[in-house]
Structure formats: structure tokens, C-alpha cells
Image (cartoon, rainbow, N blue to C red; front, side, top):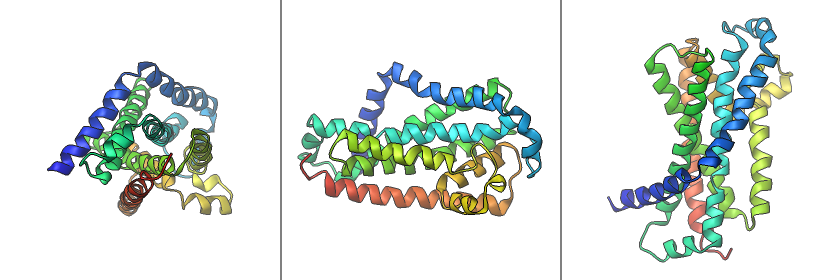
Length: 259
């Protein structure tokens, strides 16, 4: 119970701090909005090409899961910057001398970042409804949100790992920018894997973003193959679990070192 309370305390602090940055929320919504409106309409004539690989919807329906995950990626992976600020201004030192569990700090930050990323992704999902993208049932919607939470938890863990290892903001941002966009582009977010060169398609299959987008796209369009659903969900759960363990270990080890 003490551990749960410790995690709750960290989560509450992070979410409360985030809620005060209304302008930041707006800025983080601009990029995915540009993608879903501009890119979605630019490539709308590619629907026959998308249909050639078995997708029955239009391009806007195809791209929406990718934009939702784009939002989750960047909100999650940028969230670790707060850890850098906490180290620089002494909050982490104050917490470390308290009886709170070190792992609780890492888990609290990850869960808070995941919640924030999920909320922002749901905002994009809501906007997509307004422009004509639909989800068949409430169960499908709940499943999509669950997948976003798991995915965001994994990427928030990556952010916490980078923030724990980085010794400067420059190092943090360089590493995050190196990871974020390449992982998004190396996925079927904009075009199907079948249209990629064989070698690039093989590399994309090593990317957890790929399985997340395919899973959400299939559920949103009721094209779910049971085997694909089970495999995709298993990979996402393993990704979130492994990254959480690594993030907890790295945070506990490196927070003791001078910043």
C-alpha cells in the first residue's frame, strides 16, 4: 500500500504540473492536426493503392491510427524532460532522501506521462471522429485506448531511461529526436508495409510502433485477424513490461549519480 501511495503521489504531481501548461497542450496538438488534415487530404487519391493491399477504407481512415500513435510517441518520449528539470532544481535529491521507493518515482513518472499521452491521443481520436473517421463499437474504442496506454507506457519508459542517462538537455534532446521520428517513419503509419522495399519492410517488423499501428488500424476497421490481434497485443505488452523494468533499474541506479 505504501508503494501504491508513493506512485500515486508522483503521478498526481506530474499530472498537476502538466495541467497548468495549457499552451503546451495546444502546441502538442498542432503537429498531429497538420498531419491528419494536410497529409491525409494530400494523399487522399492514393486510396486505390491502399485498397490493392486489402484495405477497404479511404486514406483518411488508413492514416488516422498512425497519427494517433504519432501523438502518443512524441508526448511520451518528450515527457522525460521533466526528470531533467527535477534533477537540475533539486527535487530529485529531496525525494531520494525521503523513505519513498526509488522504483516508485520512476513508475510514477512513467504512468503520469502515459496518462498525458493517452489523453492527447484521445483528443486526436475525437477530432478524427469529427472529420468522418469512425470506430465500429464502444468495445473497439476501449480496446484502442488500452493499446495506446500500453504503448505510451513503453515509450515513457524510454524517455525516463534517456533522461536518467543524459547529463545535459542537449544530450537528451539529441537522443530523443534521433529515436522519435525514425521510429514513426519506419512503420506502416503512412503507407502499408507491402509497399515498402523488402529490406525496409523487414526492418519495420522489428519496430514496436509497427505492431501498434497495425493493431489499432485493424480494430478501427474491423479487419482483425485473431492471430494478428494476439501477436500484436503480446508484443506491445512485452514491450511495455520490459521497458518498465529497464527504466526502473536505470532510474534507481543513475539518479544517485551527480548531475
